Length: 236
Ligand code: ADP
Ligand code: MG
Image 1 (cartoon, rainbow, N blue to C red):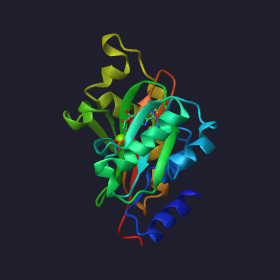
Image 2: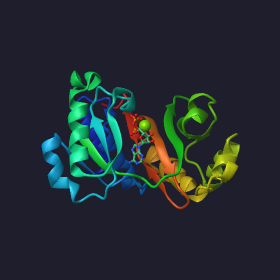
Image 3: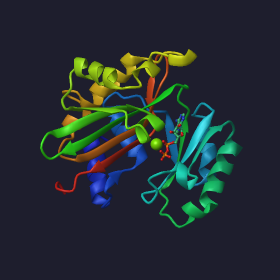
Image 4: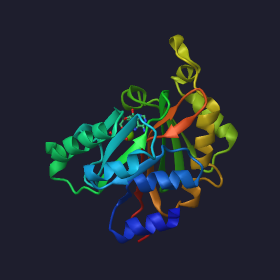
């Protein structure tokens, strides 16, 4: 499905946001790398898709009622066999925080190569229009609010400056014995999201908020492992 049809389908279903799978399809359409994945309705569906994916795998709950999947026990990483995947799904289905929710299914996906977690976001400002944001993941964003914003569309130079603006920029270069991660891969995603022909500009009328959290950046890749797009209200 194209981005426009994914958005229309969500609107037709009266959903305020794209689900994770639709969000990742939208990112993939703009050339952002997302994990290979398959969705199943329940544990019985696992055998049909397991052989097509390369373990270790991740299972995630897909529910319009659950925004923070990990908090609800709805993410399980590092699953090596079909039976581990089935067990994870069954455990989720019976966990208290998930039981009462509307469940669309379970997303089974490949693990991204290990790396630094980055956040890339977007939001619509009534005065300035689409804004794009980048920050380092985890406590850097949540506790230290170490983020950098620009008005879209951004240029390559803007994207470079956004990374230089971060107080934790040295982390990307491999501070404290860690491996350096690919700045170019992050810049590339920033342009695909916030650049001239990027996702936020192309879908400016429909997207009120975007949140890629995290983008996992390694030495030579950047993979968007979680994506959420909130649709604007004034365009139904
Ligand atoms: P939520 O933010 O709703 O709790 P995420 O999809 O972000 O759920 O998953 C939670 C965490 O699990 C991520 O921040 C990341 O550390 C890890 N994770 C999720 N999907 C993958 C993946 N495909 N590869 C590697 N790690 C992953
Ligand atoms: Mg997340």
